[in-house]
Image 1 (cartoon, rainbow, N blue to C red):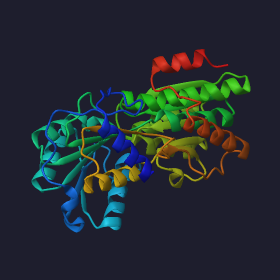
Image 2 (image 1 turned 180 degrees about the vertical axis):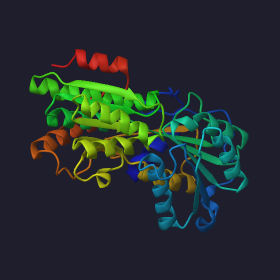
Image 3 (image 1 turned 135 degrees about the horizontal axis):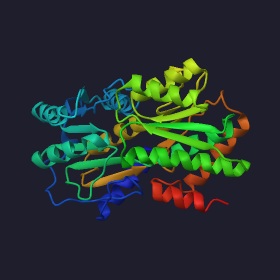
Length: 359
């Protein structure tokens, strides 16, 4: 994936385009701010300071905050950079924590999650000599000291939706989202499309029940929502909800049903109940983009879009809870996505069109 990211960065710096806020196709946007002074590659890597600020999910969310921190830890192991993190307990902490990271003289500061979008943008504009990066958000106009990294989450979500369709015995499955947004919508509609694709293939109808927790931290609420779905006939529930999702997985264990994890392979949380996971390799992206910025190869003002094609998303190889035939069929679909022959929908409108055109 390192070569892919380098190519994307080079392409993004070569053109100037406008990016929308929904995180769809690969794009770039250059702002008018002057680039930060100095070449980061000239600094001794052992003294290069990189910090990240989590969203309210916290660094141990078993999801993208944790993966981002793991990426920085790998960066430290590989090149000796000085890495740190600050947790945000509430949204009001974002600006304060970013200011602290600037005051601590970090060379690069990461914000994790679309909820931090405005705070990171404001910090980048206020501190043009500091480099910033964000996971899961992009802008119509990106300052030249800010790099945005987004994932086409609809792609792995489509794959796990297909697996759910091929696995369900009740023909009823669920989706639990965190806070409703375009980003989480990619998970929901990608998943629903995968279920519809699998149902069409088998000549049956499969119902998808969806509910949002309006939180990324309330695991008890996630457990309550999923428990209701299981008692209502769902036998598989996919979550895209941070710490809320740990409650979904706990509910699956208690009901002896299946949950589908997100971002990282979450099978370790319930080996007999996590059917599969929709992977987003945030750790790899954070590590490699940080290296590119350290080496002066990424100047900011860009958006990097990653998915199956870049080996930055997919499903785990471990598949003991599903049939071999189902896994192989999912991998074949993954190859179609990689080749551009299959394009999972990222929004409700695209989903409706996708389902209408299913043959």
